[in-house]
Amino acid sequence: MSRRLLSFMFIVGLLCLVGAVAMAKEITVAEEEARAVTGMEVEVSSLHHRLTIGPHIIDGDVGTRDQRWISQAADTEPWAMFMLPEVVTVDAVVLYSGMDAHDADPYIADTYVIEAMQGADWVQVARVEGNLSYRCVTAFPAVTANAWRIRFIKANNWVDAVDYRARIFEVRLLQVK
Ligand SMILES: [Ca+2]
Image 1 (tube, rainbow, N blue to C red):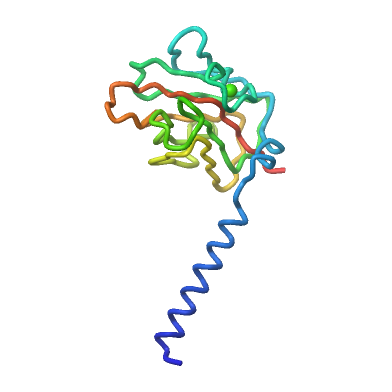
Image 2: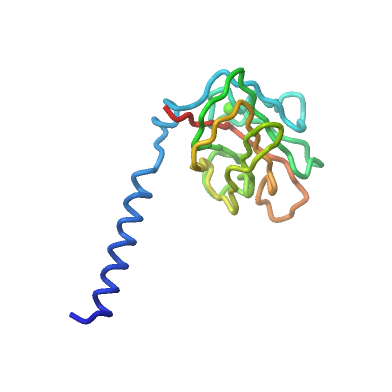
């Protein structure tokens, strides 16, 4: 067997191993529900109208239109902040967004950053770009904090780009247990 073939087989084997590890880390909805941080308060940058309030994104309902937070059209970089009475250690965030609770909906949150308060500063722990999934799971190295924030850089991927509204069904911070 040539060295080139051996190298190729080694690389293929390595890729399979990396793939298997990535698969093993997939977070199921059951795991997400079991690990979701509770007892949070939420504050948001703006409201589309008086019924599209911030607490809707932590009410446990991930698929009902009327149970979303929707930000104001003119708020070009909306954000949602989550505050806790004590620190929690979190290693993933699940965000449900869009209009009709299905993948590739044009109103899904496209690009956003997840931040944790460290000392007096917001520190970025993850960035999502080009999201097309109604349920978007973002895993990152565990961070301990009592305040978290999601800043939407491109709050939806509607091509006309005249509508900057974030349409968020639910946000879950997943606690390391
Ligand atoms: Ca909800």
